[in-house]
Image (cartoon, rainbow, N blue to C red):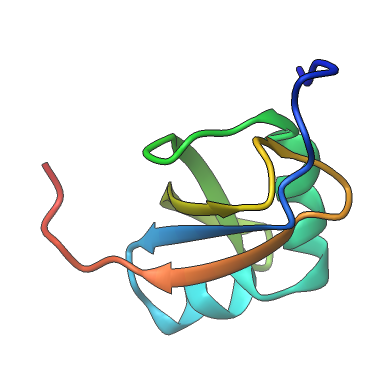
Length: 93
């Protein structure tokens, strides 16, 4: 939840894993970006991690791990926040 002290971030860079072409394509869709704005609305910090999923078509999904790498212009995700996605390839813990 945002407070009066929070300002909307203009952009948030998020790394993702697994770094597959299918995941990359799904993260780039306007509908996924809109979903993420709603699901993660509110205060955000570098290092925050989110367990999400992307559609693989025909009712199937793939789990994806997202991590906030950089925040520009504020401290909260809002309706105008833009996302940049970068792949993350280090091994899973």
